[in-house]
Image 1 (tube, rainbow, N blue to C red):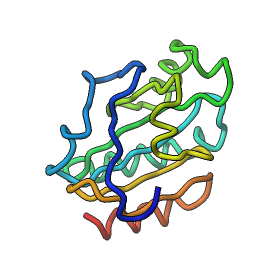
Image 2: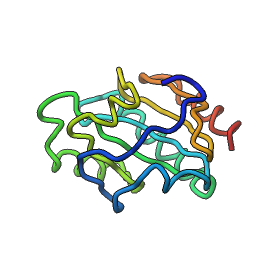
Image 3: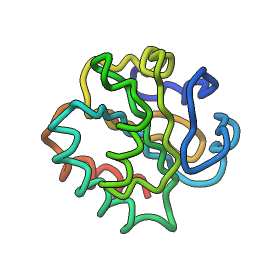
Image 4: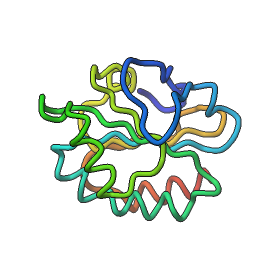
Length: 145
């Protein structure tokens, strides 16, 4: 994805946790949106989750957050493993298990963790991936809010 691209369609085969199915139009027009991709087998993702949790808690009244699990291995597709990690790291926001990597493809995910910040109109304003840069993510998020 490129900056200023619109939020991709969120309709895909997979299981939503912590919510009913969410559609793109459910998010547009309300608050900025943070979407982050992670995987059960990704240690960098697990190290970043407490920091993401802090940001989500800090900005919860001004921000919509979606968590998307994308499998890196066959074992990553086990729903019980996804649920266990989500519980351990207190992922309470809507979580989509992208078992067939449909959304991962639409967002052009190459590495996890990956973070996308969209305006309330659904325009991509920031993207980053990899284990470093949570402080940059927070600065960008603060600027958009």
